[in-house]
Image: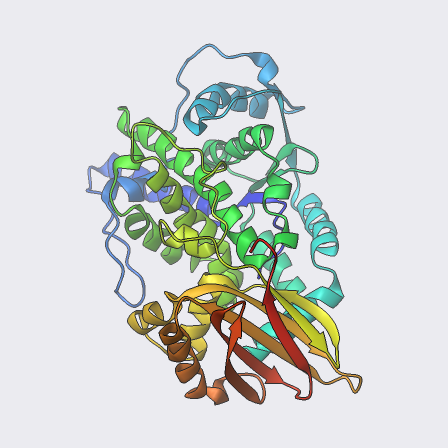
Length: 448
């Protein structure tokens, strides 16, 4: 659901690095053992391996390797930033498995300049009419409050968390000028990987929202997961003083994810955001890193942007999942205001938070997902309706979803109807919330 896809930025990750570094430095200086493992508030998460908790804090421990560097690698008006980035870039490019083809532009910006930039990007990526339509659609599904100010929330979220970002439009990397010196290296490591990525692939087109919310989220998981894994590997080696291959560490998400999720609670705007927004922000870093790690478990680091690029959040979460069906929805008797996809990630949130299933029950329901699409329509009298079509792998999977929806009708944001349908010869469900009297038909896109 979260826009600003074109801005590859590091959110709570960099702040987590900085805050945990102070605890780790204190423990090392005092001879105390590493901090006790972090757990979620539900105490269901696995403990984080001490070295990986420490990696979240390596800003003050990472030091220059002393290698010869090319001063022409970075263009910056800030000599200190430029020198730091110049020293980091060759190693990061090597770890990324990508070629550094041109100098990287790097500049510092103030908080006010960031606020101005975010407002401009939001006007481009999420104008007020679209923001209102998205809120209305997700509110009808029960995923967000109907009075949510999405634009204001996103500005608060990014303003609260962004410490640096790579901007594909201008092919430049920016860091905020109020960052403590000990946090800069961890911040630069992550963002410089984005700069290297953008010299080999077109980051903006890769995460183009025109391809649908689910596909864009999956692409962001490859982009951010790749940068996050390179950052963790580099900083771990700086801490341990020995080569480390994070591709060989089992259950990466189970060890690192809880730490990031727990630390994210330190940010009021993020902690107070609806789950569907909160998880769409964290997903690319945690689950994206796990996705890329799976590609790196062999002798060769598979490029996450080639044939392995995920086309859905299901493919990020489930190795070997087939590409989803691309669905089309046609509407008669109403004006189409907006249409998009949820995807398996957001469907799971709906099943858990709106339909009330536990994790095991949600697994059973969403595992049969095979593609979806929703459309928000408005009748001539101003009444709106949300139609959500899901293609399923089997009739049994469809019937399970239909049954749990019918058992939780009051959880949605309006009058609800759900029926079994076929789409392109595949079992599907059509869920409608809101106004009636709108004819909706679904089909499979050519080639989808």
